[in-house]
Length: 402
Image 1: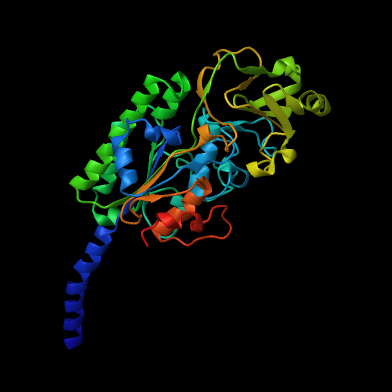
Image 2: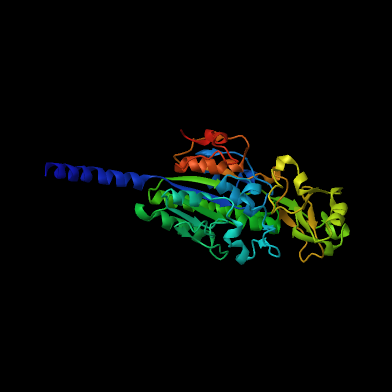
């Protein structure tokens, strides 16, 4: 009886303390502002982001090649380069699926686990470790991985406004501790959309930047109102480069369109020769052209870390900065802004801000690669580091408070 009384007393003392500890653990929120070039932070239209950077760590982040949305978003949550995680482009062909093409506009393909199963994203790792996760959009988060999903997830919908996205996240975090996510992702597409349509130097883009910055302010204010600490990691996937219809390389002037499949065109071209035309296509394209250099995938510059995955097209043509590679008649002229260029191009550099109790105040980081973000998030979430990743925690350790 004395033992039972002692155990009850211990439970009464320790139970609320443990509950409070669980309740007080900061939530980690990974925010992507698609297409937010690193130097947009200097335009004087982002007071909330600048304040977060001052209270935490910031620095220019080099994206992975190709500097496209889906490849880099998956890199950020896997710590692997596109060549290893398998999302090698916004559009791609897999030799195991002849006649099919993955594109971000084709939900049947984009939501098929086949395309995503070469690397485990962070929300799945966290779920397996017993951590509740929630994703308010992130490329790949809608797709089950090994039958596992985040506890809460949303299928991407342009019609859900930025303000509504913030409200959804705040509602998740407002839950009791037992149902509250420990790791959340949040995605904004409007800066990228404005950059493509109007160009990186437009008033319309600056307005889009300011609007998303205001929503970041709403997120911070909402967390403060509920007295909830959070570790905010705010990133982008790539930058943006001005393009023009006057700066175009037309593939059909070099090889007849019936001989090749243009898997990707624009800042780079991913080209698959039609069966039986390999040598003709190679003879016509390989080597240097005005404003374009073409390679066999295995001969791409080693610094790009790209070309070993069989989903990479047989021939890759890289445009000069600000130029576009097109195929056939164009419904829309290449104008406004584009990305996908060499990841060493300063205009492709991406945003990185980390602010919250896990991060050191006023840390200014030298340039680093975006493969390092996943190891950083693992450290903040208490997940084990993996030597098999392309990223390294050591590169971002100066950002941590400890």
